[in-house]
Image 1: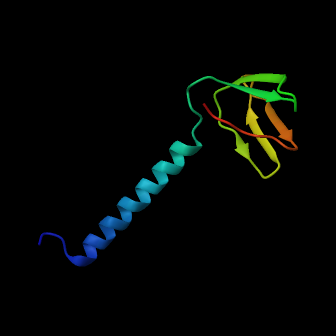
Image 2 (image 1 turned 135 degrees about the vertical axis):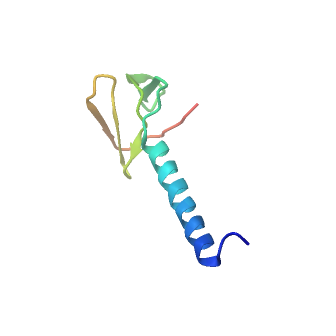
Length: 84
């Protein structure tokens, strides 16, 4: 065998750490696709609409994202996030 057991374990650990780091990086990187975010009232009418390339962060009762002007939009209360 061209790998000793110790070298094999180190190689596998390095690969796992690299893959986890890469997936975290990709998850936290804003997508390049322009998305429209809409806020509706209880009857289904649009209250407000934003264009943004960033993902929505949900912090338990509060969500936030950056709009296309770079300002942070924070929405609190009862909300539903759907992605199509």
